[in-house]
Image 1 (tube, rainbow, N blue to C red):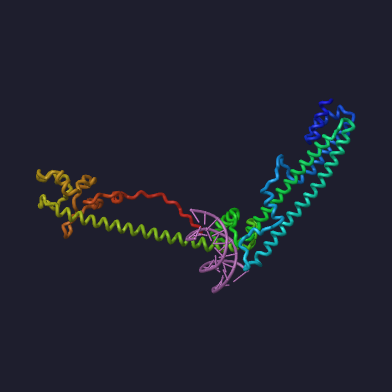
Image 2 (cartoon, rainbow, N blue to C red; image 1 turned 180 degrees about the horizontal axis):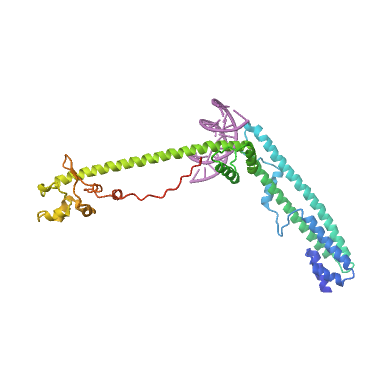
Length: 378
DNA sequence: CACGATGATTCGCT
DNA sequence: AGCGAATCATCGTG
């Protein structure tokens, strides 16, 4: 019985009321109804009074919060660039801020006053509860002290929370005023996404009706005039962008064409040089001038002193990797300069090392898979 | 701070 | 009134 009473006492002083403990006590105590009622009543009272503010287990007065709450004494307008020229623009905003701070302050003081009252009530109620305990257990000054401490601790925390809430409200207000003070704000991602989606889905005819504009405005939380501005800007800018893309594509194609022309010219030059050198170095047997130097069959017919190594060193075109593969072809015509021409694919034969690009020219280019270009205007 | 993106404003046209 | 176009002014970023 003593043990049970101890538990009950502890439960009351710490507000940690375990209903099982109470139930046991109720069963074994002649004053059970009274005890049961006062415990629950006290607990419910505390709960209902406290739930007006968020309670934290350990909350200490914060210097940060108090610094923010200094706005109550000396409110400073959050926007710096206040000049005389734009005073009429800032004044309503400044007033809004000062009024807001005042409102927050009044709210806080009101709630704080309510908390004080509630604390007084709780204290007197706690004392009343303790007095009623005297009917079934000894109650001394320590019990009163405990319950006073317990109650005032709860209310102190509530006050700290209240100040924290007020500080948060001030920060939110300052941020809002700062945002409103700006000349222009970019729309948030949701808004631009919504507008972009509509624009893209209707890119064939991106002109929303009045009703659609109203819907978009509501959906994006912007004014209808802003929807109009956005679509006006979007139409002209996507058009400009499309034109820019077209322009760049033209430039690109022109550059490709120029490069191709340059390559062709280079090849023609090479062919000319090669033929000229071939004509001047082919002194081994003037009688067979009209036969290709490159024909291996001809090499066998040449005088023995002319070794392939010599030809290699002196003229260089034997180093051409394709020499023997194309060499069996005969020249098809002569021109006035004694140049010999060979069927298609033979022109690359020359003194200049065959480049990769030139080799590629001999083969039909592998067609690259093409991806349809995105056309924003449809 | 330079520069591109972007929302708003203005003007002329139909 | 609604639009395209040019322009302004600010924002956001490297």
